[in-house]
Image (cartoon, rainbow, N blue to C red; front, side, top):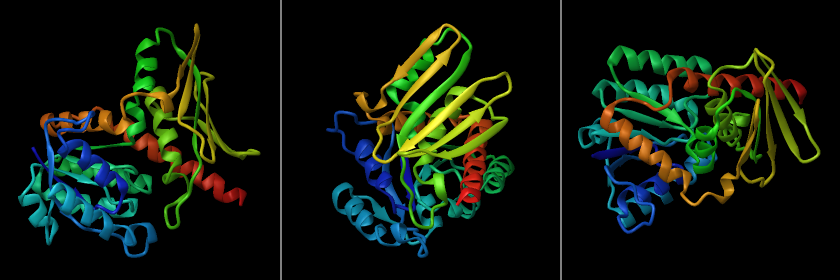
Length: 290
């Protein structure tokens, strides 16, 4: 399967390509290769504008990925596409144009920077019969999946820890907080009733309350490792993600390839929207406290 990268302005573009194209890699993912890219970037976002040239050079020189002059040219040479552009605001307009080709599209995190844009992407997906999938790789982390599969009783709550980091022009938690929120949504599988945001001595804490009394905490700290504890009525399960043997990018790409082949996303539309809803609400509360 030929894959087009749209917006190679992120390290995910080279990381994904290495795992897909390098057959000697110990965690190589079979079933598809990145063959073409469209070097889209957002000029108002420094991390996008300043890094795209280097990533494009790596992709062409090390992995022989062709450079297309337009989105149309890229899609003519591909069976599926990955939107890897770091600017979540660009995902809706890019998807609108790409969906005209009715080929499956994976949108790298964030799905969008607003719930309104996320809903518009899903509406366009249905209108054009274009399969779409979006998520953070953390939902497929090895130990997190093992913990979820081991659970035999109703959940009572969760504690999720990860790094706190922000990026200029990327709204708040959409940059790095999204990974922990993705893990949370993958566990709870539904939206919250209330969220609160607090600063701690070492970072920031998001507390989500659910109908039925469950409570989940997302604790973000500078340079913290990814880990999670899932609480149930009969015990707790610890997922030390930072100790996992299989890279979560590799596990994500396995799911993406299967999605490209079948057209069926392993992440529901409801969960895609829920992640953005959580982040949007938490960001608004964070801004109020400034």
